[in-house]
Length: 144
Image 1: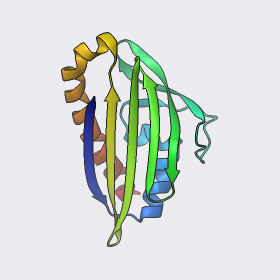
Image 2 (image 1 turned 180 degrees about the vertical axis):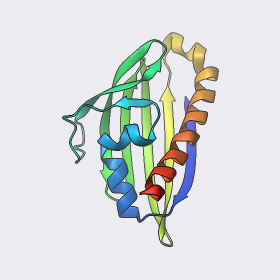
Image 3 (image 1 turned 60 degrees about the horizontal axis):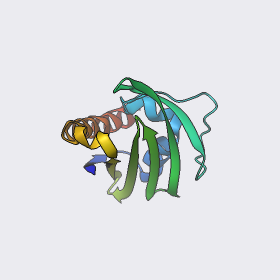
Image 4 (image 1 turned 90 degrees about the vertical axis):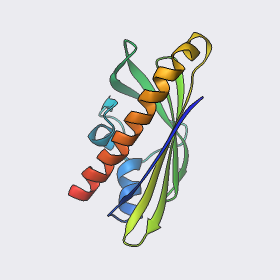
Protein backbone atom coordinates (compact mmCIF):
# COMPACT_ATOMS: atom_id res chain seq x y z
CA UNK A 1 0.00 0.00 0.00
CA UNK A 2 1.11 3.54 -0.78
CA UNK A 3 0.27 6.25 1.77
CA UNK A 4 0.81 10.01 1.81
CA UNK A 5 -0.33 12.39 4.54
CA UNK A 6 -0.09 16.17 4.17
CA UNK A 7 -1.21 18.86 6.59
CA UNK A 8 -1.58 22.61 6.24
CA UNK A 9 -3.20 25.43 8.22
CA UNK A 10 -5.69 27.37 6.11
CA UNK A 11 -6.72 30.86 7.17
CA UNK A 12 -10.44 30.08 6.81
CA UNK A 13 -13.03 28.69 9.18
CA UNK A 14 -13.49 24.94 9.47
CA UNK A 15 -17.03 25.27 8.09
CA UNK A 16 -15.70 27.13 5.01
CA UNK A 17 -12.96 24.56 4.35
CA UNK A 18 -15.34 21.64 4.85
CA UNK A 19 -18.05 23.15 2.62
CA UNK A 20 -15.55 23.81 -0.17
CA UNK A 21 -13.90 20.38 -0.10
CA UNK A 22 -17.15 18.45 0.42
CA UNK A 23 -18.57 20.00 -2.77
CA UNK A 24 -16.96 17.73 -5.35
CA UNK A 25 -17.62 20.30 -8.08
CA UNK A 26 -14.69 22.25 -6.54
CA UNK A 27 -12.18 19.37 -6.90
CA UNK A 28 -10.81 20.55 -10.29
CA UNK A 29 -10.06 23.98 -8.77
CA UNK A 30 -7.44 22.57 -6.39
CA UNK A 31 -6.75 18.90 -7.19
CA UNK A 32 -4.72 18.98 -10.37
CA UNK A 33 -5.39 15.26 -11.00
CA UNK A 34 -9.15 15.87 -11.30
CA UNK A 35 -9.83 17.21 -14.76
CA UNK A 36 -13.63 17.45 -14.64
CA UNK A 37 -16.62 16.63 -12.47
CA UNK A 38 -19.88 15.99 -14.34
CA UNK A 39 -22.32 18.92 -14.30
CA UNK A 40 -24.97 16.78 -12.57
CA UNK A 41 -22.74 16.40 -9.49
CA UNK A 42 -24.61 17.99 -6.59
CA UNK A 43 -23.26 20.22 -3.85
CA UNK A 44 -24.33 17.80 -1.10
CA UNK A 45 -22.47 14.51 -0.75
CA UNK A 46 -24.52 11.35 -0.39
CA UNK A 47 -22.76 8.40 1.21
CA UNK A 48 -22.45 5.59 -1.30
CA UNK A 49 -23.36 7.65 -4.37
CA UNK A 50 -20.82 7.09 -7.16
CA UNK A 51 -19.71 10.08 -9.23
CA UNK A 52 -18.10 9.62 -12.63
CA UNK A 53 -14.93 11.70 -12.85
CA UNK A 54 -12.48 12.57 -15.59
CA UNK A 55 -8.98 12.54 -14.16
CA UNK A 56 -5.76 13.83 -15.70
CA UNK A 57 -4.53 10.92 -17.83
CA UNK A 58 -2.43 8.38 -15.93
CA UNK A 59 -1.29 5.03 -17.34
CA UNK A 60 -3.38 5.82 -20.46
CA UNK A 61 -6.63 6.13 -18.42
CA UNK A 62 -8.71 9.18 -17.64
CA UNK A 63 -12.10 7.89 -16.42
CA UNK A 64 -12.86 6.81 -12.88
CA UNK A 65 -15.25 7.23 -9.98
CA UNK A 66 -15.39 9.01 -6.62
CA UNK A 67 -17.72 7.83 -3.87
CA UNK A 68 -18.27 9.34 -0.42
CA UNK A 69 -17.70 6.61 2.17
CA UNK A 70 -17.92 8.73 5.35
CA UNK A 71 -19.11 12.27 5.98
CA UNK A 72 -18.75 13.81 9.42
CA UNK A 73 -19.42 17.55 8.86
CA UNK A 74 -16.48 19.82 9.75
CA UNK A 75 -14.48 16.87 11.09
CA UNK A 76 -13.88 14.09 8.54
CA UNK A 77 -14.62 13.21 4.94
CA UNK A 78 -13.60 9.91 3.34
CA UNK A 79 -13.74 9.41 -0.42
CA UNK A 80 -13.09 6.19 -2.30
CA UNK A 81 -11.88 6.37 -5.86
CA UNK A 82 -11.49 3.73 -8.51
CA UNK A 83 -9.04 4.72 -11.21
CA UNK A 84 -6.58 2.84 -13.45
CA UNK A 85 -7.41 -0.43 -11.74
CA UNK A 86 -6.38 1.01 -8.37
CA UNK A 87 -8.47 1.58 -5.26
CA UNK A 88 -7.78 4.94 -3.64
CA UNK A 89 -8.93 6.04 -0.18
CA UNK A 90 -8.74 9.79 0.36
CA UNK A 91 -9.39 11.10 3.87
CA UNK A 92 -9.82 14.78 4.74
CA UNK A 93 -9.54 15.79 8.39
CA UNK A 94 -10.56 19.22 9.70
CA UNK A 95 -9.72 20.79 13.04
CA UNK A 96 -10.21 24.38 14.14
CA UNK A 97 -6.95 26.15 14.91
CA UNK A 98 -7.31 29.73 16.05
CA UNK A 99 -9.18 31.58 13.32
CA UNK A 100 -8.16 28.96 10.76
CA UNK A 101 -8.37 25.26 10.01
CA UNK A 102 -5.80 22.53 10.43
CA UNK A 103 -6.50 20.49 7.25
CA UNK A 104 -5.03 17.04 6.63
CA UNK A 105 -5.36 15.00 3.46
CA UNK A 106 -4.31 11.37 3.55
CA UNK A 107 -4.17 9.37 0.34
CA UNK A 108 -3.91 5.60 0.39
CA UNK A 109 -3.55 3.55 -2.79
CA UNK A 110 -3.89 -0.21 -2.86
CA UNK A 111 -2.20 -1.68 -5.95
CA UNK A 112 -3.12 -5.28 -6.74
CA UNK A 113 -1.66 -7.93 -8.96
CA UNK A 114 0.76 -6.72 -11.60
CA UNK A 115 0.20 -3.10 -10.55
CA UNK A 116 2.33 -3.79 -7.48
CA UNK A 117 5.30 -3.58 -9.84
CA UNK A 118 4.74 0.16 -10.25
CA UNK A 119 4.42 0.81 -6.49
CA UNK A 120 7.77 2.68 -6.15
CA UNK A 121 6.83 5.01 -9.03
CA UNK A 122 3.32 5.39 -7.66
CA UNK A 123 4.60 6.22 -4.15
CA UNK A 124 6.70 9.14 -5.45
CA UNK A 125 3.84 10.44 -7.57
CA UNK A 126 1.25 10.18 -4.78
CA UNK A 127 3.48 12.00 -2.26
CA UNK A 128 4.37 14.78 -4.73
CA UNK A 129 0.81 15.28 -5.96
CA UNK A 130 -0.73 15.18 -2.50
CA UNK A 131 1.64 17.91 -1.27
CA UNK A 132 0.96 20.04 -4.36
CA UNK A 133 -2.82 19.67 -4.04
CA UNK A 134 -2.96 20.53 -0.33
CA UNK A 135 -0.94 23.69 -1.02
CA UNK A 136 -3.27 24.47 -3.96
CA UNK A 137 -6.27 24.17 -1.64
CA UNK A 138 -4.68 26.61 0.81
CA UNK A 139 -3.90 29.05 -2.01
CA UNK A 140 -7.40 28.87 -3.52
CA UNK A 141 -9.25 29.26 -0.21
CA UNK A 142 -7.05 32.04 1.14
CA UNK A 143 -7.37 33.99 -2.12
CA UNK A 144 -11.18 34.03 -2.03
